Image (cartoon, rainbow, N blue to C red; front, side, top):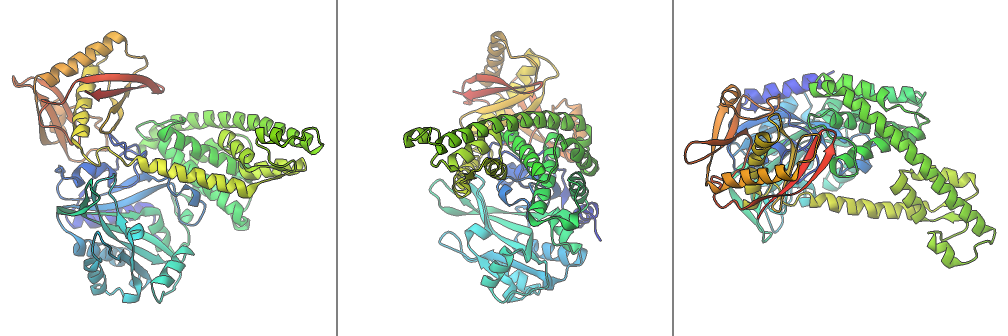
Amino acid sequence: MITTKQLRQKYLDFFKSKGHAIIPSASLIPENDPSVLFTTAGMHPLVPYLMGEKHPLGKRLCNVQKCIRTGDIDDVGDAWHLSFFEMLGNWSLGDYFKKEAVEFSFEFLTKELKINSKRLSVTCFIGDKDAPKENEANKAWEKLGIEKNRIHFLPKEDNWWGPAGTTGPCGPDTEMFYHVKEIQEKNTQEFIKLNKSGEFCEIWNDVFMQYSKNADKKFIEMERKNVDTGMGLERTVAVVNGCDNAFEVDTIKPILEKVVSLAGKKYSSLSKEELKSTRIITDHLRATVMILGDEKGIVPSNVDQGYILRRFIRRAIRHARLLGINGNFCKEVAEVAVKVMGEVYPEVKKNKERVFSELGKEEEKFSSALENGTKVLEKKLQFLGASKAGLYGSSEAQASLGQASVKELNAKGCFDLFQSYGFPLEMTIEMCKEKGFSADSKGFEKLLKEHQELSRKGAEQKFKGGLADASEATTKLHTATHLLNEALRQIVRKDISQKGANINAERARFDFNADEKLSDEQVKKIEDWVNGVIQKNCDVVMEILSLDEAKKQGAHGVFDSKYGEKVKVYTVKGKDGTIYSKEICGGPHVTTTKGMGQFKITKQEAVAAGVRRVKVILE
């Protein structure tokens, strides 16, 4: 048996022996990057370096990154999908490439983890008009002993990564799959079929960033090529230990056992639907604990990360009701999650009171929403009853209230309850049945699918702009936020620090610790200070320093575990030597403030307790 702790250490030790510097996990909330709501992979905090910035620790890096993914939320409840997971990653920034990456992966899996190579299958890019067939990785796998019938060539949707935005680095990848059962596929079609049925588990992905997609949608070979890999910690621990699902690993199983206990059931006797609900509750509350416990302090809301967080909590509560868990229960599950995950991520233990408090508030709000939704549903059913009795014979009257049939609550009625009050379809069907009515479940599923498709498209829009494309406008705004940060300290309060930022080519959003709105006078002084620095045509100088050196020089930063042994420090310095800003940052930045434009604060608002947000532009 191998634990998650042991696998984490094995991975880091292995790649350290191969010349990789170990970097810490970044926050779940991406810094300065609007391309995603959450950190979905280890590469996100490294975007500037994958784009060409020099990393202070060199060209070979590795880490264990905490991640949140919501694109597969509808698949959570099966054996392998998780919303929160830990990703083991190693990177080559213009150093080694395909052959070496494949060899490292194979060596770690077969030598360090003792996985039988006969239980591995791999996929490679099949090639298309944009890029040729992936022969280099294919040859490397063959040379390592992977038989041809276990090497499968698939199209872009399966074996291509990126770009993160509409333009930028991208390339083919090769993925590694573990045979959960001792089954040998005969060909690619059989592999696809067996993979869909859960017979294989994807555990590692090596991405070869060798192209850059330009504005004309053409793929240009890059001079500097990178390797970006990702291995799912929980999945890998599960398969190495002979488990057929990710919920058996030591960082998840205690949480699941608590959920089963609260339901008053036995794990071995759970029905298929009960097992799915149990896994959803376990997954979503584990993800919730990690988001609430993150150093960035996101709380439930109706927008962005806060909306996803609220959705996790409410979906967990809905499925708890299906299991017969009533009343407030989230804290009991969260306590187990804090204990398990706090050993690896100290910030979770440190912020546990916030975790418990916000969960309690959200449970109360959702209970109220369920109560209000019940009243709305009862009114709808009263109307149906009146229509059934012939009191409302007009089809126009029925349509105006969203009812298409006097015997059935239509799809729109079901979906409105789901959307506005969080009513699961099962609850609506049950209440309708009690009153002698049915519910249009097929129509509901259609509306839900349409809604999910719109949500996915909306999420894809998050990949436009941001540091992923490193445009001139984005870079200028990034430097402007450094000046804003210093202006806030100079004019408002010395202990102000950045709590988050979101930058694209049009504007920057900047979050900072404050209880009160900036006065008109303070806004004017901040704008004047920043514009005064910009007009001085200051130099923006980058240095690579040790963390101690950066502290001694007065560089601003959070100074926690997110930094490595060496850091990049950007200094905005006047021609007379005056230092206006000195911050630890990954970049990118302008080299001079000349031509940055006119700085202006256009909006301000509260985003959380003790956190304010300003929106700024450069005209």
